[in-house]
Structure formats: C-alpha cells, structure tokens
Image 1: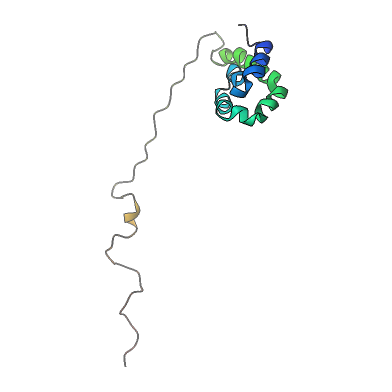
Image 2 (image 1 turned 135 degrees about the vertical axis):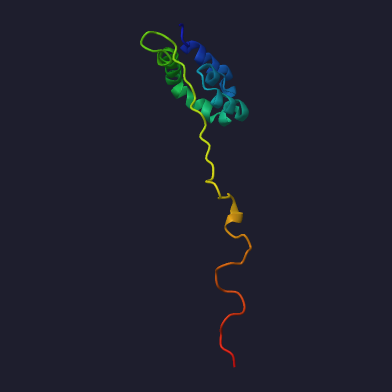
Length: 121
C-alpha cells in the first residue's frame, strides 16, 4: 500500500486548494465540497490548511493502514456486521395516540363554565 504523498498533497493545495482538491485527496470529501462551493472558505480555510496539511496526510495514511485491521479478526477473516431488527413501539390495546385523547368533547368532568351555584335571590 503506497499511501498518500506529501508532494502530491502540497501541489494540490498550492494549485487547486481553493477548490478543495487536497481535501478530497486526503479523504475529507465533505470539507472538500465546502471548499469547492465557498472558494476555499474565502481562502481563509485554504491558508489554514498550509499549517495542517502534513497532519491531514498523516491521518489519511494512518486510516489506510488501520482500517483493514479494524475490519478483520485475529485470523485475518473479514468481519461482517448485521443490523439488529428495528424496534417498533405500539400503543397498548385500548389506547389511541394523538391529541384527541386529551379532550374528546364529551364535556364530562371539570368545573367552570356557566350555570351552577351561586345563590338566588
């Protein structure tokens, strides 16, 4: 595995960095797209990457080395992952969901309203 070249990363940064080419090269497509759409985040992000480009290449190369190790068991067999079945929450029998549970308009219970009590004459 050859890994990513510092020279290539620097050349991409120098000539096409404002378009995010160096970000795509080191495996950061989201920020590469952001650079592409914002002209290197108005060239501020592009200039900041001059100080972090070596670390970006190092991280990309480390990911290339570690990723296969994380996806295999001790015997070198590729690990497979199965997704658990989705959990479905249902209301208990006899209960409805929604706001109409709170007031069904039957007028039962509660106080207030007109009529009721207050002494006649």
